[in-house]
Every structure is written in structure tokens, then in C-alpha cells.
Amino acid sequence: MTPVEGRDLYDDPRFHDGYRRLRATGAGINEALEIPAMARHLPAVQGASVVDLGCGTGALARRLADAGAAEVVAVDASRRMLANAEPHPRVRFIQADLESLSLPSGSADLVVSSMVLHYVADYPALVRRIADWLRPGGRLVFSQEHPICTAHRGMPGWLRTGEAEEGCHIGAGWVWPVDDYASEGPRTQHWILEGVGKHHRRTSTLIATLLGAGLDLTAIEEPTPDATALHTRPELAEHLRRPPILLLAARRREEP
Image 1 (cartoon, rainbow, N blue to C red):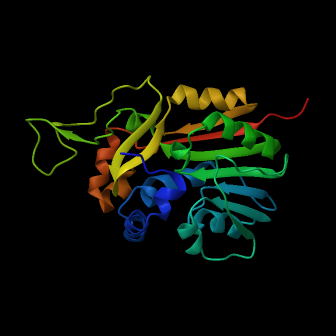
Image 2: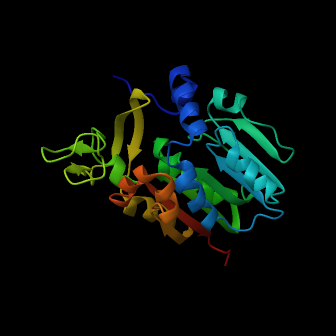
Image 3: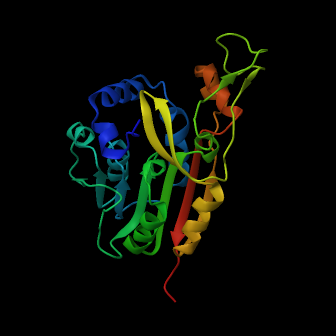
């Protein structure tokens, strides 16, 4: 089966409808884990020029514009996602593939990306372009699926052993398999659709690529649910057993 990736994935009506239902119900991890983590690491954006890579329907872009960004260039490859984006006077939506996106050098104070870069095949090339787009001192903040989650070639998710309790994914007997961690490259999994394509990279590769492009790492976080989130949604406790998200923040080095 040919993996379904990028624009083709989010423009597939079956995936698109399933994804919108997931976000509308708040059943995923975005609201509980990823959005609060991003907020902790985003710099002040008053008057800033911002680029949002893989903006989807523009929720993050609009939040940044509301926080005072002068302009947010919100980019996504999916026609369907952008068609559902709510307009904002300081958000400029662009349909483009991140693999080939070109922006002016030194045009951005901040580049953000929320749960997208694990879909990008050529991560080093994109990071080099991001470094070029950033002004000296500019920031990059992005989240992606944790490499522990993308490592196993089959990406099977939680597996039940003989001792596991039926229907319980957080107790004894349920395990998250980590295998083929050092073997980087394409992966496929069943997520809403069969054959969703992603790209696995080690954490060290993700960080070394940033450093090699002239960016200095400023933060690394593996968000987990706090007591309030666990009280509201006890099923989030499974994310205390393995991190679902990796968040990295970096800063472009100042010119000599």
C-alpha cells in the first residue's frame, strides 16, 4: 500500500472528516498537552512577523495574531483545511507544500509548527530554509510526534500482553513497543485511515540538524498530563507511561 502523506492525506475526505471530528470533540491530545506546551515556549509576538508551517485551519495563527503579531503567514498544503480556515485581518493564508516552500531571507521573527514535521520527508532541507527565513535572534518553536511513537516500523500503538485487563490501556500488561529506533525513515500506521505515512527520526538527529543549521537549542519538552487534566480525562494517564509529543525550541544565532 502506498502511504498517504501531506496534502493528499488532509485532502482525503475520509481522513479530513475524521480529523475534524477528533478536534471538535477534544478527544485527542492537542488541547490537553500540545497547545499548553506550545504556549509555554512561544516568545512574545507583539509586532513580530510570524510563519506558521502546516497551519491547518489556522487556530494557532489566529492566536498569535490576537497576541499582537504584526502578520502571520499561515502555510498549509491542504486545500480542504484552508477552505475551513476562519479569516483574520493579520493572517495571510498560503497553500503550499512545505517541502518546496520559499520565503524571503530574514523575513521572520518567529517560525512555528504544530504536530506537522513528522510528515516532512526532507527535514534537514526544511530546517536550513527556516534558518534562512529567520532574522538574527529569531525563534523556531515546533512540536511533532515523539520519536518513541514513530520508531516501530508497524507503529502498532499499545499492545496487550496475556496479563492485561481487557479494555484498559494504562494498567499492567499493556506495553508500548519501541523497536528500530536507530533506523530512520518512512513509517506507516493506521490513524483514522490505513496507511498514513510519517517519517521517523531520532531525537538526537532532530536536535543536531537544528545546531548544524546555525540554530541554538533553547528548550526541549516532552509534555505530560497534569493533575487537572487527569481529573478531567483519566484516560490521559497512558501518556505518563510514554511521551506522545516532542517539543523543541531554537534561536538563530546573532550575526558576528
